[in-house]
Image (cartoon, rainbow, N blue to C red; front, top):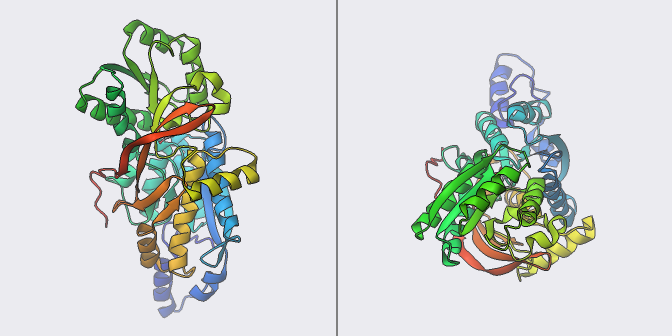
Length: 402
Ligand code: BEZ
């Protein structure tokens, strides 16, 4: 139900306020009782970049969330699920308006979003102000589960630090002493480089140059020329979606692949391999997922995703699936009573997911504690090589839960 009077107040607080109003003779009949609310469908608002360079990531998240709900017979904790979608276009400037559409106009129960770290930070701010439950199924902005952490904010993906810090040691162990970094210039890329630099310098490496490309540009030629001139031992890159496809192809076409190995967090090769083809073969990346992880949950997940969508699942699908799984854990604990906020959040925080990526628990900051895998592209798959960091928790610097 849309609450015009209290656009940023949750239903429980609104009921309290209206209870006060009842004492002064104002009508409260338009508010559903908890018993009725418990039977009503739960409204999930997806705020995702359905258009632009990150569109395939949005689709995978949306697909797999719905697939999880379908696997549970269309209900979580006894509640049917109703969906509302907003295309955020990976556009930070439009973030507040788009989030407000879901929170105030559509009055969804939970927002699931988004992919882009800059957009996510706008969502986090509004989630904190409105107390709306927010589950982040991709964006890695460290602050969301750092200084901006809150009891109503959960993430089922990663912090930008998590997959990039271990890559520093991986590259150093492979013999790289001098590296160049290249990324889109926005929060995700910048935080990735900071994390990589921390791991690489700790392992004895030095960073020769940091190159930044405006987001979401894909004109890489002048940057590739600079890399060729600097002749580093290796390159660390963050791009994802359509940008990753183009970068990996351009890197190989420029003749750099054989002489200067290209590394990065696994976003560089996840969900992109059919379009990258031979250009990606042999690339090593670090991420919290690999296609061929040998566990029953992953096998069932990939088979069902293929059946539903005639496509291979990727890390983004895993994160969307787990967003539904953590919501299910909460709703089951409170038997669908979404107004039992504290018990709902406690159950979500305490969830132990049997995820396709392997075991997932949640840190006190409500971010996944998970393995980071070293993978290698082999025959068009991100194949498991080993564990680069086991059960890695983000440091969550600055998180103080209210
Ligand atoms: C981010 O903006 O946080 C992000 C986007 C795509 C892949 C990974 C991270």
